[in-house]
Every structure is written in structure tokens, then in C-alpha cells.
Image (cartoon, rainbow, N blue to C red; front, side, top):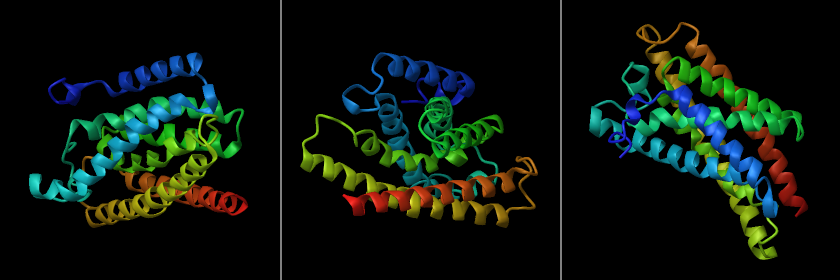
Amino acid sequence: LLDDQGAGSWDLLYIGLFTFVFLGLIRLTLGNKRGVNWYSMLHSIVTGLGGAVCLYLDFMASESLTGVKEPLRSVQCFGPLTSLHRILPAITMGYSIMDILDGLTISLDFFLHGIATFTLMGVFVLVDTPHLVAPFLIMEVSTPFLALVKADFLPPILAQMNLGCFALSFFVCRIIVSPYFWAELMRSMWHERNEMECFPSWFPLFCFCFGMFFNILNMYWFRKIVRKLKRK
């Protein structure tokens, strides 16, 4: 369906700009109505589900469709497996500007997360390899539950269940799945280190450093989540 709409040739910078404007309008009109961060929830539903689909296709379909399993296929300079792989990082790049703005009033780690996300997605978009980072957006699967933590329309039992779903999805997607796929990406880059002619020379080190940054940040946040669950 995306291919039929020409998504394979959409300008990724325009996608990022459109996302920022669209989510900005939602932020201005709805804000945190009823205790829910609506623009964050919308972004996370789209990118979380999209990232999960990209990761599933990479692990379960790429080898049967192309003969080479991901992420090795992308490291060997093949293009995106689907148009979804291509456009998702641009959507998150546009959204990350909202994270940066929110981080100015929420906390330093939130602000740094916004800066890091914008930088990461921007580099992958500018280097024309967004499909490499698209599966990692499965990390957003936990964010809809986070957006509902302060919702004033959830009865106590559902609020507790939502908090449990947030902690569980955060653990599975950010502590287990994403670091594993990142390790596979690093292994493939090391294996193909002398053949990666389509990437800048600094690109593998960039992927390593930012992967470590997000892994450590996710561990830091997960520790805070566990402490909050204990208090609850």
C-alpha cells in the first residue's frame, strides 16, 4: 500500500517536517487533556507498531524474500526491505523535536533523550540508511502505556494494569529485543568492515556509540521504573 502511494521516493526531510507540524497542532489543541499526552501516544502507536512490523520482517521474511538475513542485508548496501522501513525514522525525527521542547521543562535526561533521538534519526536519514534504524523503533511499544499513566479516566485497577504493561513492554522491547538486534547489527558491521563502501568510514563507530547511549539510558530508566513499582 505504501509502495502504491509512492512512499519509496518520498522526501524524508519533508516527512519529518510534516510530522513536527502535525503533532505540534495536536499538542496545541489537545495538550495533556484528561492527563494523556496525546501527541506522544499517537507517535508511539504508529512507530511502535511499525517498528515491530519492520523487526518481524527483518528476522522472519528478509532471508526468504531476498536470500540474505537482516541486518546483514542492509550492511551489504542493499536498500530498504519495505517503504515502511524507510519512512518510520523520518517520522520519529520530526517527533523528537517535541521531545526536546518538553525536555526543557521536564528533566535533563528527557531533554538529552530528545537531542539524541533527533541526532540519531537525522544522521540515518541524511546518510540514506533509515532502514537500518527502523526496527529499533519497537522501543516505542511501551510509550502508549506511559502516556496513560496519568490518565484521569482509568479506574484504579486499570491504572495498575497499565503500569504493569508499561514495565513489561519496556523490559521486553528496550532491555531484551533492541539490545539483541543492536548486537546483531554490530556483529554484521564487524564482519563486513572491509566491504562497507556505501557507508562513511565513521558510521560503524557512530552506530556503536549511540547504541551504547540508548542501552545505558534504557537501563537507567528501567531501574527507576522498578523502584516506582516497588513503591506502588
